[in-house]
Length: 201
Image (cartoon, rainbow, N blue to C red; front, side):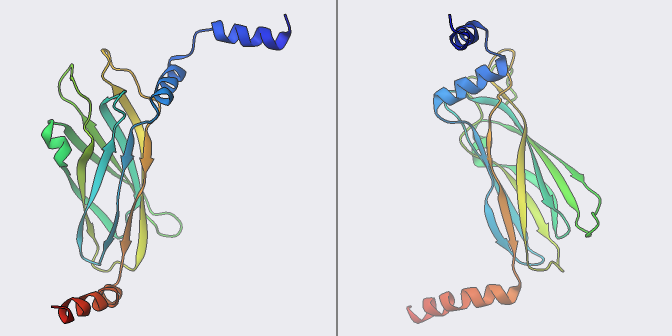
């Protein structure tokens, strides 16, 4: 038997590692769970709510999910988290823990916000829901300059509904963005729309 063919046959007979089995299963289902943040505009001194949404894989539901969200925190301060509508409907537990970093050589401070969403039942029948899991409340500093702050999510861990739970290897992410605008810039952008509204009514 040719060596190349023997290697193929031998590889087919060897058991697949658990991590690769999970990835293969998710590939077969055609999609993976995905955590998404949004793009929001804000002005100095404003409060804003950043939504955290989950698009699950119906064939491989999750019982828990932990995500780290990193961002430059000089002008953006995390205050608290609130459960989203989807989380409230199925009694999802939402926890948040903030770690502040030290300024770098350019004076930029970076913070890491860890968000955990989990189902409290030991044997849940359904996984984490499709939709809004949480709202993150931030405060923009009064002296903030025009700046775009990227919120970058990284999945730390995810588990399925198995007993005992198995780790889910692949979860996608979509970053968020907070664009801080000067009040003058907001006025210039909205003034034509406001004028059009008044003159058309």
